[in-house]
Image (cartoon, rainbow, N blue to C red; front, side, top):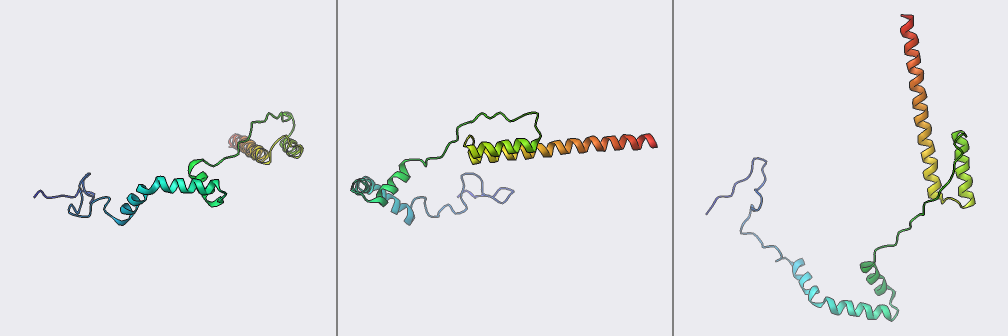
Length: 143
């Protein structure tokens, strides 16, 4: 009988088992149950369809959940012209008014407000970097 050896990492080599005389795949209780159900599957589905057609909501729900993918809402793109020359708070107010008027969905408006907030942080970092550079230059000139 050929000896089975582990690899250096302590794992069995690909395709080899640590228990070659162990239980075979598909011989467990769950596999047997699945095989039994599979034999009766067409009859089970037919009964569900009959019950669903007669008004059984649970049967209809079970069938529809398994057959149809869930419906997801999709937002249509909307073109909105923010005032470019205005400050960011004015642009934010413009977005809020667009939500109130129904031009934008709350989700779209929230995404735009978050984008404006992110832009504000970027602008603040740019200004901070410019100020720091100016201070460093002024300090270098003093020395």
